[in-house]
Length: 321
Image (cartoon, rainbow, N blue to C red):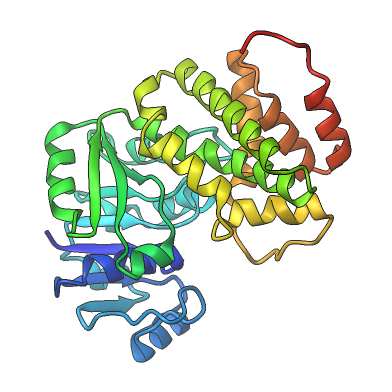
């Protein structure tokens, strides 16, 4: 397998490092030529993943043509950039195994990465790589387990075999809908969990939020055709637990700042913001009740304040769990 990671953010860089750690050649594409040259020269992506040295077998470039020999491309870019990237670079992506590493829902179309890739490449078998992981852990070689979801078993098995390493274990799923939604929706719940902690509501409130948030995630996923087992696995519950409880989570830190009334760094990508807006529309169309997601969307759009959001959730009608 010849592979390249397209996207030199923290996660893309970490994947390139992890997959090349055994000496295997791996490409890393950076959008900015200046950044690509600096990373290649310094053997470190100091802006996104400081302190992690790139193995000599990682080649860095801003030219997609330099990775023409790669048969597997990992698309490690923000969800809201994926559709535009595919549109602008379709010829360079054709006839490859495409693995989306984005977690979210496209705000413009309400679609996940698999639908975007299948529309651009009819007849292809795109995959999504998702699950509980932080870039720093992967780059340091800490044990990590992820889900690779693909609608075609032969393609999926080939990718799981080719991308797994002694410390990066991939589990195969054919439920691409469930895997996508688990990775996307947990970011919304992580923002809510951050708000809870930032506002000083306590650990008991966070536990309740995570539990009811998981129920919301499952309701919408099932309504969209996902399997309940997928939501209970790595790409759903596993990722939810990690993202709602760690300061490494950008979504959690964003919510925490909101709960404290602080301004969050606008340069940091927070996928859950756009996803919350998209989820509200999907839930409305499917008549799925998602009060936590609505609360997050209201908060990020500044239609409601933290105290109002908490009061609204606590005043909902009492019912069976």
